[in-house]
Image 1 (cartoon, rainbow, N blue to C red):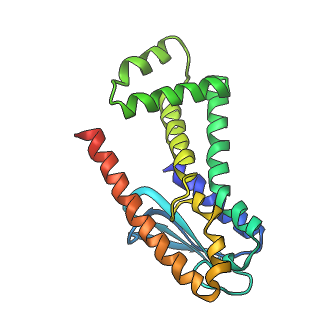
Image 2: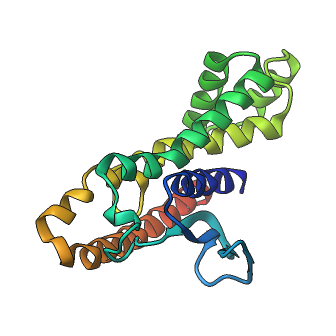
Length: 206
């Protein structure tokens, strides 16, 4: 959950710093079971906690002072702010938990390989603790999730931050129709990503 919270707050704070109002910050996906407002921003807590989103003013329509109406560089800064916050958080965890950014990254990368190839994690993690390579196991697992979030969100797939490298081009090509096209693309991307998540869960637990 920390991964999602820091990521979405990165988008929200950067948008506010660029004078774009934030409508919704959702931790989790689908229909929320808890909502509350803080200074006109609606916060949502939803059951599907693998993911979240930030809804900005003018994200689905071309309005003055909205997200789609800003400069290309501003869009990229807001889109990649979540990734940068995740990266910065993982760096802090590496320094505190492993005393080294390089060592922390190599540990996380090795854990990812073990997960992908369904190798046992317990012997490796036990050795890390015994030989004082890490301080806290929970921080190591958090940094692994942050690393996954960074790598995953860099993919140029609709509904992910990486797609904003090319999606603004549609604004120039289709102009007034582009918000509708972008919304449909992001919905398709969201469905695709949901299927991928379910397949990953099935692969890991089959």
